[in-house]
Image 1 (cartoon, helix red, strand yellow):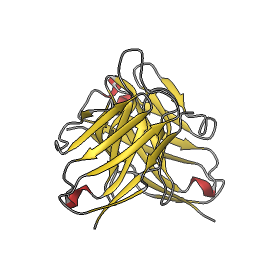
Image 2 (cartoon, chains in turn red, yellow):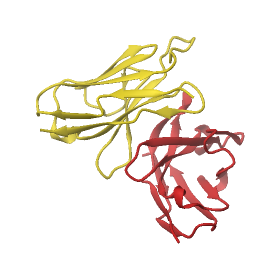
Image 3 (cartoon, rainbow over the protein chains, first blue to last red):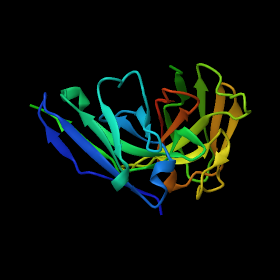
Length: 120
Length: 112
């Protein structure tokens, strides 16, 4: 069974750094792109970017390029989303997504979501 | 970026009745390989989104056959033949043609 298990909720202050995680299991981790989708409070879905563990290729949405870093540790089948300096506007639920084998841009499995709250 | 526009944004439906959601893209999602890179997702209340339909008309594994997708190019439709109580939630269309992937605004289906 494919599972994406994300790290727990975080409460941070503006300017702080943060790294959240997503552990994949039940499939070949290096064969699928893995990425992140943001959902602002009460809002819709925004695709942030994807990472291919097989060769470290990374694609970011222009809206998130330079704002976050997506990385992977293949040895433990875990993807990360990192911020250097959080802003209040980063408050959202962040979903880890696995892409389908045949097309890297299509999420076919979603993690349970990680709520990030940034408040002074 | 490709802009995805859904309608309606709110859809009250009586159980057992059909429902239909439209999704239009600002540019064609028809790839040279003949596939339309349009997917549909359902986000049930308090849950993560789940894939319903991919490549415009293919049901994902485990999706009931009352759900169907159609369309090509820039105009797509999701239909539910007979709505059940468990179908409530927000439906999103999404293009997967290129980076950046973008979603429609979402259509909230509620039971009358």
